[in-house]
Image 1 (cartoon, each protein chain N blue to C red):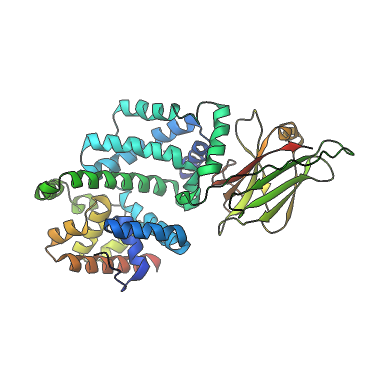
Image 2 (spheres, each protein chain N blue to C red):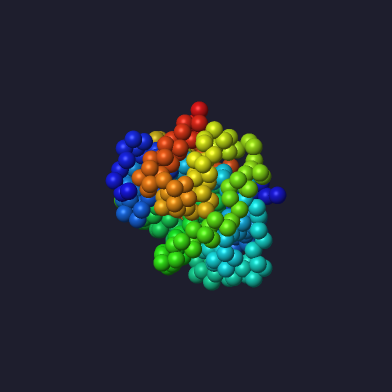
Length: 181
Length: 231
């Protein structure tokens, strides 16, 4: 297991264009980041494309890592998740006429309930999500991990679009209060 | 959907931005604000950090072996990467184009002054950012190896410090010369072992956590760099 400090050090060396540090970072983190890409996209080919983009982004942005103040894994996860969501959105934009089908595909995945089993108990986020109504906690997870839009969520929970926004924003604020207390 | 829903203000808006729930117009408008508003950036970073924990328990998946080669090849063909020389070029590239949100391109000016003839070799380097917000002067003091560093303008980001690095021509990487006092003069004694490298080296500053880089290498953004002039 590569420690947080090890990964941070690798990123610092990558900022100085150290290729051996880059391959070491790939070896230490690609399984985790590929898992995230695959989870969001649920499509191996697309996940592979995105994983490449992720590492190219890391190579070029390593110098700005420290400015974020993030832990190294937070930084890597955020890049991966965001690029995967971008890919997901561009796929969806390309198949807007097949909207209903897209929703069906999304439904076929194991839901947040299934992945909840292995959720780490010490994560403050998990603990605070537990305090929310189940549907609301799932909506937050679906937005972050599955790239659900307000439209997807409104459809899924069968509520009007404006209502879902108010509903989710309120949940996010409850979450924030819990996380900061 | 685009209109601001003021009930929860920017805190909720930042979360929606991080979750990618805003529509295209609202997303762009938010990004424009991010460039100008540090408190908004802090909210975004906070949500990114909290939400990333949701991904902690996603199962690892081994990517196909060919992908590793493809990724490494992309980087190997990066002209900035090829060699030590390239490593040096990479530094310049970062000084010119790096930084959070590509906010400010920083360049530097090296000012050459008249040779001082009455004493032994002495060194100087000037680091000035393009927008004049950061400016540092490095000068030999009583002796060539006693550097006086003055931050003439600019300060590190909140909660960060400036750290000075020597990048000698043949060195494997930057060597720390110490953390700088951002509001006054800092005296730095260059170790004898590094003195030979100083003459033809480059000085750079990065922003680091208080006390300096925990790793011995720069972990923050390289904000400015300047070649050492022998005078």
